[in-house]
Length: 285
Image (cartoon, rainbow, N blue to C red):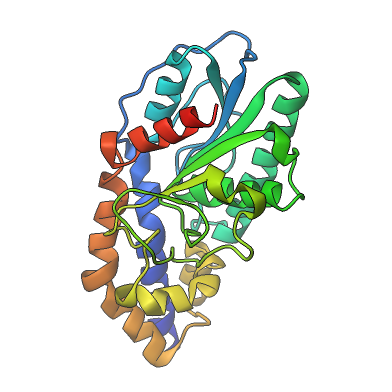
């Protein structure tokens, strides 16, 4: 029974994370030349790619990732803006828990924001991200909005996060979702003084950013799920999620998680996400 429950919990963890990781195969067509030296422009957007779309040591001068590469290419063409892309370990749940990947992404993003601000003292710094990258970017934006970030709010332009698991009240709504919250729930205290400078782009069918009653058990156990790894489950076959809750979570897969996964990886091209994110960032330059 213990191993069966562990396997069930692992299956739900895979369902939860497979959406952002699967997006690494690419739904993006943006192509932009790599600058030999990262340049300063009046507006610099630090982009955080989603799950499976970044790795330590990648150059920060080239936008990569599903949806974020398109967004980066558009920003590079604008003329008074450029981008930096965060390089971090973006593959959770294999041998490293999501919470560890998240912490690495936050640390690397804060480092890049602070370094860029020091390198370009006259530039305004903004943030953008998709999925896991949206989780990271939203948390850094919240830190800035509450006075504990890598830069002061006066140096900050705006943030556009696509399919953030932290979506909640207190930000500008983009996409088709209205109200509701992401699978992790809203960030405590929201975005502080940056509330009107953060756009949450979310498709109403995407369970990552618009969790509802169909994925309630998964949401209730988000903390346990984000601490799992596939290696741990394979070795021990155990989980902190047991009995009825585990079976209910597995039952959510065909009715909530699977349709929501499809929306998560397929909804944000063009007017579904990239265009409103681009427009919002530009409006705050």
